[in-house]
Length: 441
Image (cartoon, rainbow, N blue to C red; front, side, top):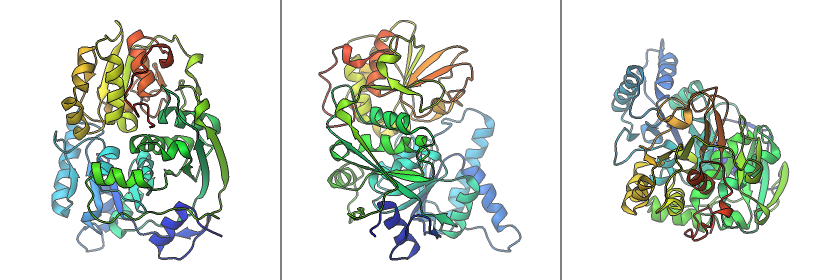
């Protein structure tokens, strides 16, 4: 019997010829990532080394990436002190993949890793963040772990007692209609299978809609795979993967692909015709509470958020700017823009997208996770409603348990900013958008 992509990656990492779902392994890790929670990981690492008489050292400083993004700039003295501790640790350990709070190299971890060329097809990537699944867009197996497990990886360079997950094969065929794209596809899938429908399994994405999707859209669908309970999402590496790594991540060395075998054993097969998809919206207070935009059209919105690790990429900002150019955000509605990295922020400024958005009334923020997480920038008032391109809408997610968060694509969010109410983007005459503005060619 052949192997899925996840099985092939784990077999290689464990030094085995073949593995199957249910096997228990200790795979070697190619890259780890953490952000401000590195302070917790450092505390756990100190406990591992305490009493051993050995100097505390990470297994390989070249394979550790640390990016400040959740609370930037620091919003409290406690956060600033934790960041100071991490900076000292980075210097002590000789960690080179460190992205501090800088306007020339930083941003949200799940954008900085791919655009920096740190992630390649076939890698085992472990991150101290649940949305590490994002990096499966580049053909890697990328999983999120807690601080204690991350500390063990920092010490040993491998994961302990990992059960090989079964894989769901999702085949997305057809062509996206105008106003519909990658975010709508992943919201639809989560609504279809529920927030627990892929628990402890991998989602492997196939089909013509995926083949023709740019890496930005693939990053979005893999990012939100975890919202269906998946261990990770994976897109088989192909010509688009190589193009992104060469042209946008400036990778010069060899890029190897890992593809599933023709006779790979899948736990489940799901087929979606994206031609039939309407714009999708996740309603409060769960990500799987999904409906076509028509079912929630007209809901008054107090705050629009475009950005985050899910939809803060250049084509997302391009789409929003194209919709808002020469127009104004509705009175009584706030609009916040969070580019996913400073590289994107700078290019969006150079292309004029940020100026167009600001002229329309949007507030341009620094790259960061604070608003999505509800700890910094853009909190909601009691009873207020937000429409966001982020990935979660749990009660209190954006900082106030008495507020309501809806999730949608950048296109739906931008059109709704013009009306001040959730609006079907197909009704507003925006169809002169640039190619791929909604996540597909």
